Amino acid sequence: MTLYMTQFAYTSDAWAAFMKHPEDRSAAVMNLAEQVDCQVRALYYSLGEYDGIVILDAPNEAAVTAFTMAAMAPGHIRKAKTTVLMGAGVMFDAMKKASHTGYKGLEK
Image (cartoon, rainbow, N blue to C red; front, top):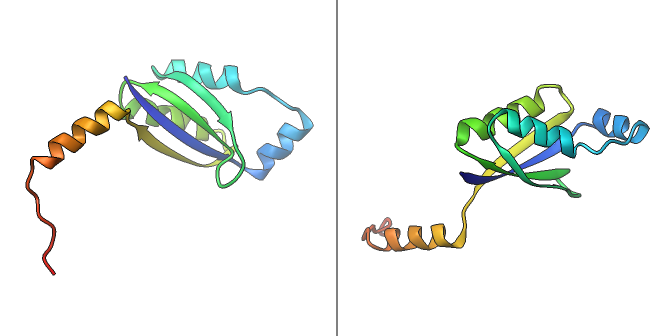
């Protein structure tokens, strides 16, 4: 399984609804993830361009994309961005592999 970070931003209507009826969305998010073969590792809220993040353990891009599509379908999320997360070991292996290519950039 691979870790993915999905950042999300709610619509102003969603925030208005939360203010009228505060709701912990953790169980709903975990249930959705399980339905598409993902597991929620963390759910955090933040301030700024995005209102929160979900860290998912997913078997592939199709599963994490299904999670994001299903989450956005009701219309309360205005945007989302998903990023694959790589551990230090994966990045180290990539650096070693890249160092053996001998690839040269454009000459000036």
